[in-house]
Image (tube, rainbow, N blue to C red; front, side, top):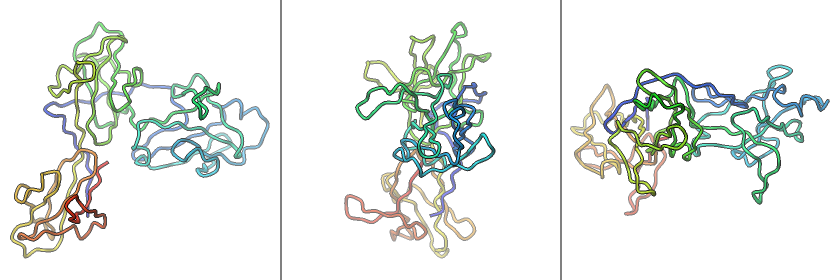
Length: 313
C-alpha cells in the first residue's frame, strides 16, 4: 500500500494558531525533523571529564534498549562531543524514556542538577540511588510543532502550564508563553486522541473554554479533548476497466458505498484523515472484495476474513 503522510489536524470544531518555543536547559539529545540526535558532551559531565581516562567510545543506554552498555555506540564528532542519530518514530510508543551515557562500557556519565530533564535513578526495588538519569521526551514543544494550544485571557496570571495525557498530566513540563491575547504553547504530537487542561498559577485547573469537545474526568469535572489526525492516502493501481472502486474498513463500519475512490492517472485514490492506531481495510472492485495487493501486512478479523492493515502513528 502506498501511504502519504502529510500531517493534518482535526480539532473537533476548533483551530489553534502558532507560537515560539520556551527555552529549557535540556541535555543529552535534540530533535531534528524525524530524528532524535543523542549528544554526549564531556564538558557536561565532570565525573568523566576529570577521571583521567581516555574516552575510547561512548554508548547510549536506557529504557529503550534495556539499559544495554554496548549496543548504541555513538560517533565521535570531536574531542568533546559524540553523537548518535535515531528515528523519532522509535520512541513514540511512550511519552518519556530514561537514559544515560556510558563511557568505555564502565563509567556512567552523571547528569548535573542544573539539567531540566533529570529524574532520580532508582534500583529494581524502587529505591533512590542518589544519582540521576536523563529523560527523553517524544512529545516536545517546538516552533515547528503541529498543534498549538491557546488560552485566551488570564493576563494577570504569572504562570500557565499545559498538562494532559500526552505528558501523563505532568504539572511543570509545558510552560505556556504570554501573548497579547493570553497564553500559547506549540507541541509536536503524533496522531492520537488526547485529553488536556491548563494550570493557572499552579493550582487552578481549567478546561479549554474555546474547545467544545470535553469528557467527564474521574473528579467529576471535565477535560478538554483534541484529536490529532494524519491524512492517509489509499491507492489501488491498475483495475482501470473497473466502473467503481470503494474503500471499506473499520474506520467507516465497513460501508460498501460511502468511500468511492477517484481514478487519478493509473490508480484509484481515496484520502482519509485518521487518528493514531491500527485499521483494517479492503477495496471493493465492481462488487468484488479484495485486499490491497501492494500491502503485505494482513490479519484475520473476528469473522475469519483476511484484511489489509494500515498503521497510523
